[in-house]
Length: 280
Image (tube, rainbow, N blue to C red):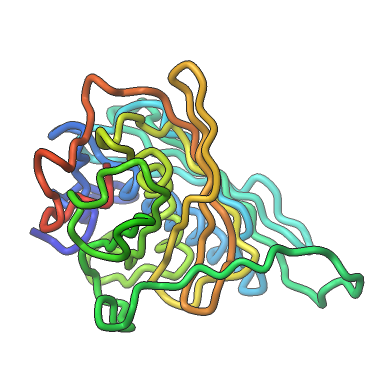
C-alpha cells in the first residue's frame, strides 16, 4: 500500500489508494482524504499567486455526494485576491460530476488590536510522550474518552463519554510531506468521530467540515477535543477545538445526518491496526 491517500494521475487527477477507503463502504473515499486533497489544491492555488504573506484562516468543505474509489479531478479558482486576503474555491469531480467542494479564506497577519477581549482559559493536553513521541511520522490515531484516557484501542472508547483524538497528518500524494494546514484540514474530518462516536459506534455521517484557524499548526500533529454537540430528528451539529503541542489554535464544526443502518461499530471490530480508522 502507498503511504498516501492518492497517487498522481494525469494533469490534476488524483487516484485514491487503499488508505483513502472509508469504513462506511469499500467503494467510498473518506472525508479525511477528500479534505486533504481539497486543502492541498487551495493552498497550491494561493502559492501560485505569489502571496507568501497569507495564511489559512477559514476552510469549508461540502461532502454532498459519495466519492467512489475512482480517479478524482480537482479544479480550483481564485475568487478574490485583495491586499489582506485571498478567497479560493476548489471542486473534486468524478466522471464529470462534482462530488465535493471547498472554499478557503487566506488572510494576512498583522499587529494585534490593543484592546482587552475575553478568551476562555482552556487547556487540552496531547497524549503523554510515551504514547505519542514528538514526530511527524504517520501513526495510528489515538483517542481519549473521559473514563478511559488515551489509547490506540478503539473498542474501549465505544461509550457515551466526551472524546478527543490525536493524529498525524498523512501524505495526500506519495513523497510529498503535507503542510501543517493540509494536515489540519485532513484531520478536521475526524471532528465527526469525536462528536458522533457513542455507545453504539458512529451512527452519523458528516456532510460538511468548517475549520477555522487563528494560527498555523506548529507541526503535522493535531488534536481535536469535542466541545459541543446538538442533535434533533437525526441531524447533529458537533463542535471540536483544534489544538497542538503549543495549545489551542482553532475550531471545527461538522453537520451530520443519521446513518444507523450502516453503523461503524468499533465494539464488533477494533480498527486500531486499520489504516482507514481515522476516516469513518
